[in-house]
Amino acid sequence: MLIFFALIISLLSNFIYNSCTENFLLSKEDMLKPILSVIKGIIKTMKNTMLRYMSFFFILVEVLLILMIGLFYYLLMPIKTSSVVYLPQGSVSKIIADLNTNNNKMSKIDELTLRLLGHPQAGWINIGKENLSKIDFLYKLTVAKAALESITLIPGETTVVFLDQISKQLNLSKEKLLSEYEKQARYKEGMLYPETYKIPKGINEELLIKLLLQHSQNAFKTASTKFFGDYNEKKWHDYVIIASVIQKEAANNEEMPIVASVIYNRLRIGMKLQMDGTLNYGEYSHTKITPQRIREDESSYNTYKHEGLPAEAVCNVSLNAIKAAIFPAKSDYLYFMRDKSTGQHIFTTNINDHNKAVAAQR
Image: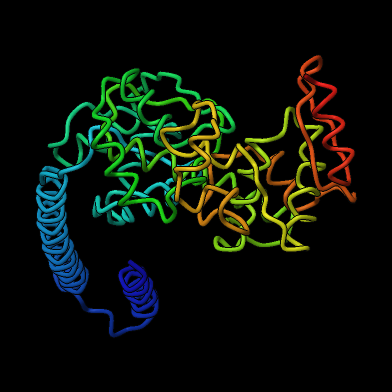
């Protein structure tokens, strides 16, 4: 356009100049020829420009169509997932990363799609199906609700008894629960954190054990970081073993540090623990300990026969019991026995005082 105006100005200047001279002999047709030539040039230039833009536009449309077809193909691809899925608290990126760790094979496309669909709720949600397209799976993450059921693990309960209880409550296989626990848990006992869990209805044995262990590990890591500044699973479990004896023996939370001191005092001088509670392991969680049982049980749990601590935890323990194991009371106590009138224990420092306390309860 600037060229066009420049030519017009030039022609007008020539016209004015020539009109003032004696040599001005041009006809009207001659005067219009340059203008028409310029106009034709402009039209040709605009036409070529339009053609180039139109070509670019059509190429862009084709590319977008190809991308859209590819996107639709990707989102309609089948994905095999669990009917119950766990989504962590946090950003969409964190959710996608967590799904990837559980073999759901998510990508940046899935992340963008999930952002457009909406932020899903955290926790265990019931997808309902295991075979879905990717778009259906992502959509269900944002709309599926968790139908929850409560199960409770009380402090001091053994894993075998707890799994038997929830197998009946949730109509699951006890054998599969035990098998999955053995596969997923690093230690035989003491790996579960006692509390009430909200479990999605319809959850299977594998996912239930995974949920329980994940939640418990998070609780233990938080507590360990608070007590020690970090989390070492082996170190933590060593305290769990001591805490499990405390859990089985103490009458209440207040007694736990004192019971812990008795354990450490006996270990320090090489004295056998000789505690009934260590024989309440596994399926014997609620079994009364008899002299016959003490004589016949050859396991490492029998602290009447074997020195030191049991090779494994006796039960699942509360944080109060672990805290007592880490921070025992300072005492010289070596003995304790239950007071029938109060249900609590009488602690003594020597065998004579202990025998007197026992005689007083008869």
